[in-house]
Image 1: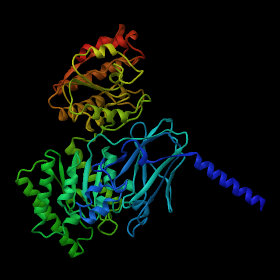
Image 2: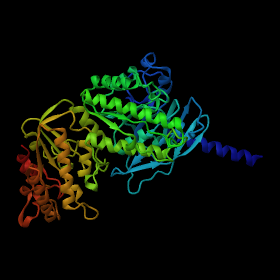
Image 3: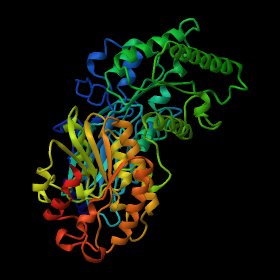
Image 4: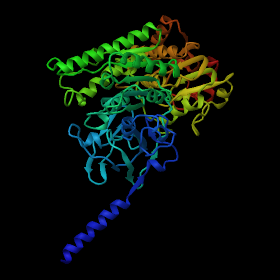
Length: 577
């Protein structure tokens, strides 16, 4: 008996000690809003994780309101170096449905990425009890002990009552504020809502968000997407990058004499509020058994005909920037639904594929075939947070005009002491005439600059000239990009800049020489020059000012063989005037 009591005491002590070593972080207690992907994010809500503000309850139909309590599409981002992360929460509804598992209805999903922006899904151990618990343990990144940025996707088909995130007591932790970028807004039916993904990360809106690196506001309301004005007004409240209207799997039930008019009225109402934002109209996804079931076949044809009629009418009436995602574009595979209506993970991927392809074309966010031309994030520099800098650039410069914008890597970033103790060349930076915006980020490669430009850093600013100096971090002793691949990437960046800031003169700079790579840089700059000449872009080569005897760098002008010192910056500053 004494031995049993001793074992029980040790077990209780161990459990208490383990609990005491976990520090809990409640999103409701964060000093700023942290729940991403919501319309009107600062408005008061009846429940903390409700998608719609309390003030809208009297304005929308009951089905919309009840479904808006579900946390579909919402996510929370945080930074931590914890080796174990635990998420504890409770929900109000049943854990599962007959056609959708508990992991999709009521589960959560946790994603992160490596320092080069490659996505990592963390599969946690879960327990669906009175309090649902997900545990992610043994987290240790190969060769990387710094903080990582996490995205926590919330349950698709349940109302979250409360939620806390636990980390090791001594681990760092910080909630990330709301994104400064314009989101994609998706309005639709139960499929948009998330039915029947196996887990939140596999809902097509969340797949799309992860692929494009842009928030997606999920306004999918199961069985309730009927294009009423009150809901269209909610869409219009969001300053979106693009709107998706995917309502036909519900709206097709309207009679033929009113459905096209309803679609046209909804689009015109949204267009009146947001004159320039792209709007995508999406066909009914179709039924895999339509060829065998007459009623399904008739419903499918009716839906396709009604949307085509409405789209053609909008075109004939001159409503601009309207796009059509067709039944054939979606190309839903035979086995891509759970019960011939709601999408499985297979179907969600098909949906995301179709939307990604169309959106990348509409938004000018094409994904290149080379590493150097494929836009991606990064988190390599230990001196600052790359995502914080990206958000600050957007928030602090909205509506401003600059004499010049200089885009680059750490050579530009730290010129003039943009980040604390890494001040270099403050005098020459201050000596540049007029107003200059520094869009340099440490460790950036061409693919990272392309991502930043595609993600709004140039959208709400203007400039007389934009100077691009990038490419040195694409040069590596092993696994780097060729000179032609780097030049091709710079060409893609120039195209992205010109599409967003057509008023600005674009100037491309040659890569500065660097220790032991002077010959390689010289060859690369010849490729960049040829590319610039072909595109009729002004090319400058300030690096020649930093060379000494025999074509080697003048070491007295560098701090580390790569970054110029104060005198080095003074030598090249005139090229940026």
